[in-house]
Image (cartoon, rainbow, N blue to C red; front, side, top):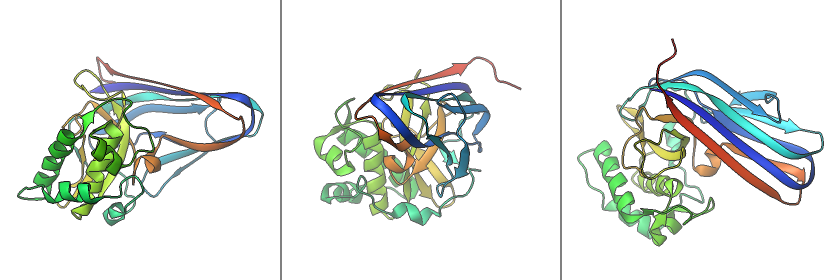
Length: 270
């Protein structure tokens, strides 16, 4: 499948800002099942000056603005060719070893309910248990847009019984780690034709399965990622994998608008 993506983030500040620094994880990588044909990231009308790869093998671009400004537009756009790999992420640049993704974070720290959920999961092997975990989390937590925010923890979302893709991923990750299975948070994009419970900018989880490597699990939609997904970045939780993280000097308050367009193109580029 040939997928075009345009992701625009627009900041408007109440007062002029004298300095901005932003870390951008807005560049997908090629691997088996995903080939980036063209991609650009622009911030404030220019390309970010510094680029590096972090410990999770994400491409990170550093954007700094030293002049006074009252708005900032960051745009990521391009074309990606994908194919269904049954959720297996193979051929991605090596980053941190799988055991790193057993680490608890504030948003993925398990409580008694999450531990109980994990302990009740049955299956003949790790892959079967992970598929069963997808169903168990989706059954316990209804997809309700606006029910949570970016600070909501896995334990809070499970207790409330409502959440969005971020919460589904966090609960899955927390439960998988209690089973001794490394798991990580993934951001990306999704063609919406067949998705019933996700925005175009989406989140899911990946778990380490011996013999297969990293395998994706989209709890919100109850499936492994297909050719309709574009993988962007990963991390221990949503904060570590956030597309944009930064700070500024000045600007007492801000207005934020995000527009994401993800479309399937009809013919593949050669």
